[in-house]
Structures are given as structure tokens and as C-alpha cells.
Image (cartoon, rainbow, N blue to C red; front, side):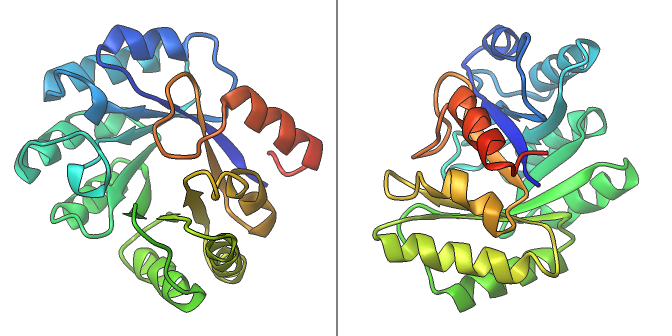
Length: 227
């Protein structure tokens, strides 16, 4: 069964707090890298306020510009921002290739926070075998959820991702996403093939091909794969 995650992005903390108010989702992803002032203090204040409001489970994400995010500071700065709020989150997302990955995974373990180890390619989709190997590498790096997102250039690309998700989900918790217009169907189909988290837009989309939170919830409930 899949969890629905509402991705929240805004230039100001108050934009994210407003979007989170009364939201109906299993999780919310705080895309802190989209904040105009993405500082340790600003992010801590935002996540603390969300926690006080008894929001859904919080995924803390400070996505690097190398993988489609907006954070342009150093890795040391990004590490300090994440570590400053990590203890307040339920999950943290860190990229497989990030230089700070192991530090974040270790800190998450110490704080009882689950880890999403992720990989994003906005250009192409590799073969099923390569995607499966990537999931395995993420699991080996300490992922509680192994996440892979690839740009779909053909319907066959979506099928490669779904086949990889179906195979890998027998051994680990995976999150599989095909991005772009051709990949939109994966937002609904991937849970049927074992993907555990579905990201949806609560306002502005945070990735190419995201469906709205309302549409995602209605379709997944109709298919019986939300839970």
C-alpha cells in the first residue's frame, strides 16, 4: 500500500505553513531548498512550527542543484541546515551521490529518523537492470526507502521503471517515479508495482509530471492502493 506525500514548496516559510494547513495526506515533504532564505535558523523555525501544528509526517528535503533542487550553497552549509532540523522530522531525503550522505544517514539513525536515499536523472531512463542495481546500491547505503526518479522519453521508459520497482520491492521498500508528461501515469501505476510513496502537488508542482494532491488521492483510493 502506498503513502501519499504532499510536496510543499514556497519562497517564504509562511507559504509552506499556509499550504500545510488542513492538508489531507500521509506525509508532507518540506522542500526547504526552495526557500529564498534557506538557512539553518529559518528551516529549523519552519519545521518546528509544522511539528507544533501536528501536521502529517514530515520529510525534510534540501535538494542540491545537481539533482534538480534549488540549493546553491556548499555541501557543508547544506549538511548544517539538514542536521539543524533532522531531529524534528520523520524522514530525511538525501541523494545517493551526495558527499554528505553518510553523515546524514548516521545522524538520522541516531535520531530515529527514517532515510530516503534518492537518485534523480532529468535526462533519461536507464534499463530495468540498471535501475534495479541502483535501488540495491541505495539500500546498501542505508536507505529505509530507496528512491529513483527518471525522465521518461517514451512509454517504454515507464515500463522499465515499473518492472524494476516490481522486482526490487520484493526485497526492500522502493519509491519509483517517471518524470515528465509521459511519466505522469507512473504516479498512479507505480504503487501497483510496489512503490511505497506517491508524491503529489499541493499547489506548485515540485517535479515534472506531478499530479495534484486531490486527483492523486481520489485515484489511488479508487484503485485500492492507498494506505
